[in-house]
Amino acid sequence: MSETPDLECRAISKNFDDFKAVKDVSFSVPQGTFFSILGPSGCGKTTLLRMIAGFQKPSGGDLLIKGKSMLDVPPNKRPVSMVFQHLALFPMMNIGANVGFGLRQRGVNKTDVKQQVERVLERVGLGGVAERPVSSLSGGQKQRVAIARCMVLEPDVLLLDEPLGALDLKLREHMKIELKQLQSEFNTTFVYITHDQSEALVMSDQIAVMNHGVFEQLGTAKELYYEPATSFVAGFVGEANRFAATVESADSGAVQMVTAEGKALRGVEAGRGLSHGDKVDVFVRPEAIRLSRSAADLAQLGNTSEGKVENILFNGANSQLILRDLTTGAEMSMALPQTGEFRDLAQGDVIAFGWEPQQTRVYRAGGAHGL
Ligand SMILES: Nc1ncnc2c1ncn2[C@@H]1O[C@H](COP(=O)(O)OP(=O)(O)OP(=O)(O)O)[C@@H](O)[C@H]1O
Image: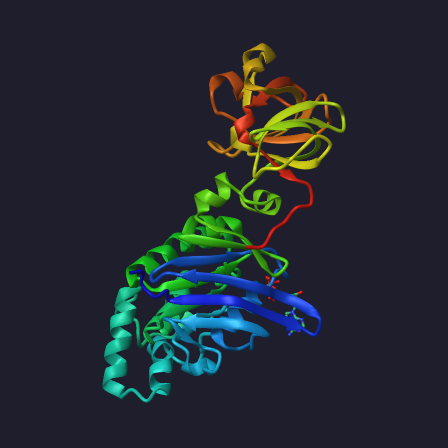
């Protein structure tokens, strides 16, 4: 018997006049999941989150929490809590008063509020700070107070609206790990919206990639990265080199293609049904590309070329090499191995590069499919 999911959306939609911001989106989130909704600005993620919170009324469909429809339940009666991008802590109240705010609203007595606030602050690693002013906290500590303020209410689902968006890069990197740890520690379902794929990849158990009001794919970080279902997902999640090509032949998933410049490419179709003459989008991950001083070494790879070094973005172990393909003129980005052989590579050098057909994902051009 499968457990009732914490959150379930059934063909949920939202129209603003005749503009469809969210189009019949269906998904369910099992208990204790870190679930991210990832998509570009304007794709509809905030609208979806606001419908879950109850701030926006759906135009159609149903929305259930622990199996119960929320359509007629006002926001303050839903078993959800929300962390906003700017956290919305009350600067005039001390930390304890901020965290206990919701409990006091619920009419919980003073002694219990104090106890519960102290307990939740301990759990987020801020024991003993209840009397201190909010202004004494660092950016990361404020995040933890904002989470504590929600978690003290024991919601079934915590909604997070890009809470790391206002932090500087270094703190954001740190908070990604910390947020995931807090979620596991509380074992509460988090629904996290973001346009930043690196945040979603690091933290999430499940990620829904949203575009133009639909989910293009729902899966784990690895599934989205290695098996992107659509060309949009392949381009949006992770880095990728992308070209346009035309199919020469396609057989059992193996595709032979040619670019506009006449360069032959071999790849693997992400789906089935391509045939001669189809226009396709082709994706290759930077780390799939191998380099050699000699083109002959890479001949067996199936896709080989020579390129001129345009730029080297040195970043220690994760340095990036930008080449200009001598045949197609395409710019190619790849990981630069920090081995002796490539350490002296300089702008203007010509070097061979190549990758296997299995590392090339091919999609019908312009294709996108909602789930
Ligand atoms: N109240 C509204 N009235 C009319 N259009 C709206 C309203 N709210 C949102 N929209 C439109 O719906 C679309 C989706 O907006 P939404 O805010 O959900 O996107 P988003 O993915 O969260 O983007 P962002 O990351 O920029 O907040 C946008 O085109 C937006 O202009």
